[in-house]
Amino acid sequence: MLITPVELFDEPLEIDETIAPGALEYGPDIRQVSSLPVKGQADLLVEHRSEERGSRSHVNDIRLRAEYKGEFEILCARCVEPVPQTLEGKFDLIFRPVEADSDSGEHAITPDETEIGYYEESGLLLEDVVREQVLLSLPTRTLCKPDCKGLCPRCGQNQNLATCACEQTPSDPRWNALANLADKIEVKH
Image (cartoon, rainbow, N blue to C red; front, top):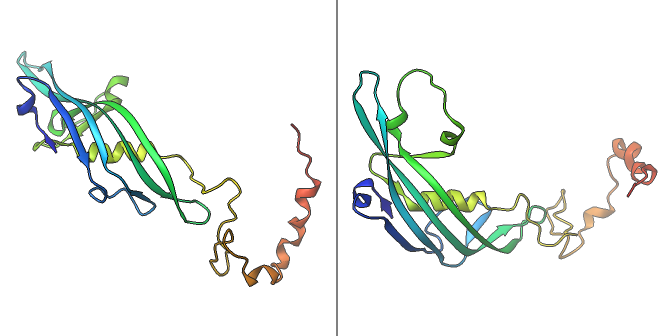
């Protein structure tokens, strides 16, 4: 869905979209498995600016407020098996046309301006914003279970499902000096 300033001049735009599974590419380790409803509103914020020579101009910022919730599968960080995960979020963002801040030279920005995104001349794609917000809502690390054994580093066998023959092979002798280190370390609570 393309949101343009022109369609926001008279009144806010109500957003009630559903993003189908597979419509957005999130990355190799995350997959959307259910419809992703997105509900919210887009408003036009007209910023009036004074130019150096006394002339005035305006910038058409788009304020996008919305929420989403959907079912995803995220690959386990250890065994790479898909883990079901519900992701949801709310956002309130401001987007400015790219050309509005494309002045040559350096200028200081306010802390508020660090929170501003940009949109191209054609408008703002809702799907791009939702994709970014979903990625930002991901947990830092996903495990299928807290004690996941992961993959065998030699043969790739998922050690949660079966034990491979690799475990009986001797370890690299260079690690022997560290083998008993865990027993020597005192854990303080």
